[in-house]
Structure formats: C-alpha cells, structure tokens
Image (cartoon, rainbow, N blue to C red; front, side, top):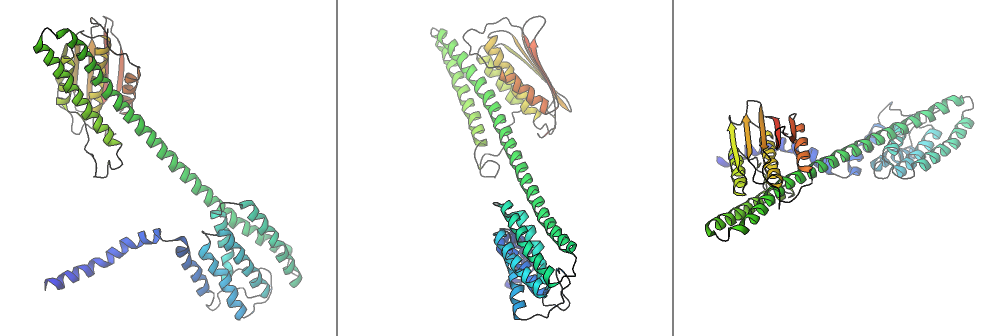
Length: 402
C-alpha cells in the first residue's frame, strides 16, 4: 500500500519536474538542435495544399515533382545551421530559392530566404561586408533571368523584392548590434561591481590595519619605559597581543570576502557588523594604548540598523586611530546617539597630547568615511575645533541595507 502511494506521488510530481527541467535542457542544447524544428516545420508546411511561399514575377505555378522535393529540402534544412554557419545557410538557401523561382514551383520553403538573410545579419561575425556584396551581385543574374523569362514583368518589382531582402538583413544587423550593446552593458556593470567591491574591501583593510597597527605601535613604544614595572609591562604586552589577535580576526573576515565560496553557503557568509559592545571594546583598546577616552552612548540601535551600525563603528575607529596618531595622550570624547531613524557620532580631542612616535597617515581614511556616509544619505564633517583640537561628526540614517 505504501509503495502504491509513493508511486502515485512520483507520478503526480513527474509532469511538474519535466516542465521545470525541460526549458533548462533546451537552453543548454546545441543551437543546431534548437534550429532544426524550424527547418522541419518549413518542410512539412510546403506539402500542405495551397501553401505558397515567396514569389517573384508572374511565372505560372508548376506542380511539385522530384526536383521540387530536392529544392524544398535545399531551402529548408540549411536553417538548422543558420546560427552556427550563417553564410553557408544563406548560400544553400539562395541557390534553392533561385531554382525554385525560375522553375515556377513557388513552394512555401521559399520563405526560408528572408529568414536566412536575417540570420546572417544577426549572427555572421566575420566578412559581413563581403557577404553583402556577394549576395547583391548574385541577385543580378537572377533578375536578368526573370526579365528574359517574363519580359512583361516591370523591373520595379525586382527592385522592390531586393529592397525587402535588404530590410531583412538590416533587421538582423539591428538585432546583432542590440545584443552586442547589451553584452557590453552587462560587462560594464560587472566591472563596476568588481571595482566597487575592491574599493570597499580596500577601505575595510585600511580601517582595520591602520587602527590595530597604530594601537600596537603605541603600546609597544610605551612598553619600552615600563621595564622597571613588571606588572605594567605585562599588562602592556598583553594589550599588544590582544590587539594583534583582533587584527588577525578582522583580516581573516575580510579575506573570507575574497573567497569564491563567499555568499554561496560554503564560506563565511555571516555579516560582521559590530554592536554596541564592539564600540566599547574599541574604546577599551584605545585606552590600553594610552589614550584617555570618555565614552557615552545613548539610546539603542534601530531594528534593523542595516549598514549604519557598521559605518558608525568605522567612524569611531578612524577618529580614535587619528587621535592616537596625532594627539597621543590627549583627552578624547566619544559620543554615540541612537535615534529611531539615524545614528549620530561625535569624536573630539582637545589636542593637548603629542603625536611623536606615531605612524603617519595618507589622509584617505577620512575621505573614505565621507564617501560611506554619503552613500547612506548622511552628513559627515571633520576639522579643527575653535577651542583647539579636532572633532569628527557624522549623522548616519539607519535602516538602509546598502
């Protein structure tokens, strides 16, 4: 009984499975196989009663015979390779079309000529101009032959037919140019995306490396003068070790972003957005480096905060790094306010310390922060205070997933 139920379920799921997988199989199949049904359709329709195709001139219709069957095949079957070998397809179809019209069969398979011309315009890659000239020159003897077989036919009809074939070629050329432009557009988008991702990772590396390395350098410099105090020396070296471990963890996360499996469920895909505890850890690390920092946090992060929380963290990180570099030992204040729709950050130093012995910077950290805040639609400012020192302010809208 259970087996019968399983068979019924499998039978019910089978049509849906076929419908879902058949289009994928068809798109992955060879273009010749995909174009073959069109060729066979023209062959089949050509044998239907009163099925007439393209006709030039006023030659009387001739009933189908053995030669007509060969010409139907010669005009229809080459459409199977219209995308793989478009020039070969046009040559075979043109020969079959010319004989078909001169003999007066006027079979439905003669409609293959405009299809072949459209395919050449759309899919021929090399020698396009040569193919157009050869086709135009080949039409001249065909027109002369029609003029001799049917002298009463006005030449304007032959010219009109030629212009109609040129239109089919032009339509194919337009489709080709549209396809090429679309491919170039997708390529530009992919390149812009890669550039933006490299820029983002470069900024993250700048923030992580600059902050942690600056803290380690300052802590190591301070440890030189603590040899007479083993307890304080051990505390300072422990701080250097902890900072190095945090730097390694952050760098490992950034390297995970470069992993090809990132984002596929096989790599490290969890977002790494520091929380309020991350800010407190950052402040404590700066204090251990010898910077007196007052930290104030008001409110609670919005849900969801999106990228605003990470940007706020980076603003505080960069500002504290600059304080260690250029105003080491000066009093520093960090104020973070969480509102319903935004996060406000203000980091200020009084400039009473000294930057001696601290590594210099390139100035691109603050510029990168300004770009990050601008992307989220916020405001960013950094500059000297009127009373001395330096202040960094940022207003970051919350809730954006960017």
